[in-house]
Length: 322
Image 1 (cartoon, rainbow, N blue to C red):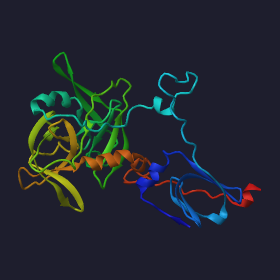
Image 2: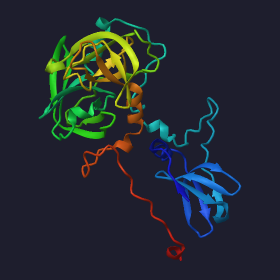
Image 3: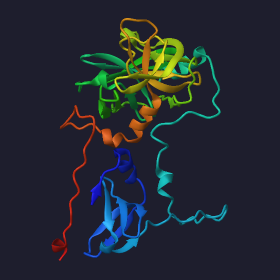
Image 4: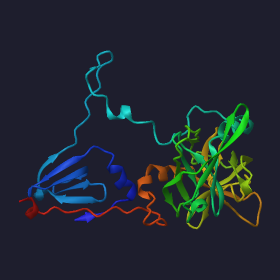
């Protein structure tokens, strides 16, 4: 008997330590045990959840627990360092709990280098780096249907702005329903980039001041400020942040900051028949997209698809083992 959980649950399972079910027909199932009942065991194998009858199970081998840490000053120098010691920090960084509010004037030069202009043959938009390795966020509609993408970065050198264009830009993941895309600059001469923190839009209060940095109508590094009008504006089944911050074509994909310099949304649209009616995708949606980016990985064979579907599992039969 098989049943499916949410894609987020399935993808998270692969990163955890694996349990093993040894079946009576000599086959094995490896994954993460979700529940054990007197008559059955539910195990997450990454692409689906399998419910296995107890009568078919010979033995359950739980995942090995990590060795306890050595007491201070008594570390074993011959011990292999844990894998986590070789892993870089998180793919993106969240906001700091002890951060304090500052003025836009204080933050704009610091944050401006992380905000970029995204150009395609069909138009332009904005974006922002989320880590030093060249990964950046923009709107899906900015790069929709495009494969030739360039990114213009503005860096401070000797007190002046230096414009640099990078043309080796790859689409890593995208969600057209959420209007989010993850790109990466892969030019050989690319440096380590300045990046921004991802804050929390859930903690915002109506009336709180916010500001945007982007390239409206191609006017790069344009800064606009306003307040949060509401954070639960429903449009086409999705919730958006509504702001009086001026949003225009070209701002799409750029960051909306709180007064601590943390990204709280991605600016993506405005109402054409009014002023001071801008909208942004809440940063919580961005974090979800990034944490499950493998599910939204770009596929050259199906570039317009919003999700990446995994191959179905192969089943090992007893006759094949004999």
